[in-house]
Amino acid sequence: MRIFSLHLMLVVPSLAHAQAYQCRAPSVLQPASPVSKPASEPRRPLPVSGYTLALSWSPEFCRTRKDSSRHKTQCSGDDGSFGFILHGLWPDAQGATYPQWCRATRLLSPAATRRNFCMMPDTRLMARQWAKHGSCMARRPETYFRISRIMFGAVRFPDMDRLSRKPLTAGAFRTAFAAANDGLTSEMIRLKINRRGWLQEVRLCLAENFRPTRCPARMRRAKDDTAIKIWRGA
Image (cartoon, rainbow, N blue to C red; front, side, top):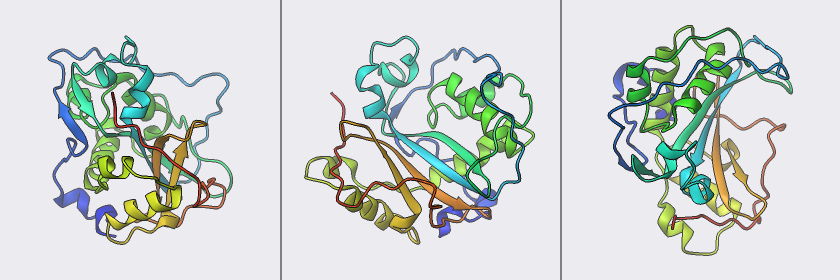
């Protein structure tokens, strides 16, 4: 599939605005403090065997957070109106577990947070994704976020407004998402749906070479006939 080929790292420009309906990075972005590994979570520097590209549907996330100071940059509307954002690029490993918290990390630079804002409009989210997942993929945050921008920016999304206006199932949504991207099939897509039946996240399974691959059996799959709804925003 063309969108995940490693050679794209050399030839594709950043497309961080791909799913931002509007995006105005604040003139001053408060840097997030470096994230430390929680005592309850083990450090697992395991060999990487593949990846998961997790894409969060921002209208649903922000549905109850528009007045939240914690999520102001993503949800208030002051800095942009977002569709899909990048939750994270996560390394996987063979078996039932995955790499995490591979090494201590430093504060992200203002340039890094600004460059990635329209893809991931929350500096604390950036800091956590780099510390927990990116540290297992790269030694420098710039490398991790550059790969993330390329992977995110190259994904093509179906018409979410059209899909939201008709009865929809998980199977039909996966088919529509796959149809928008050459070489992607529904077996390479997992969905996170909340208990009320609303779409929260799309997760794409990638092989070690960043090409799409069938999701492992341990990743739960919503049944094709599961009803799903898409929140468009107030």
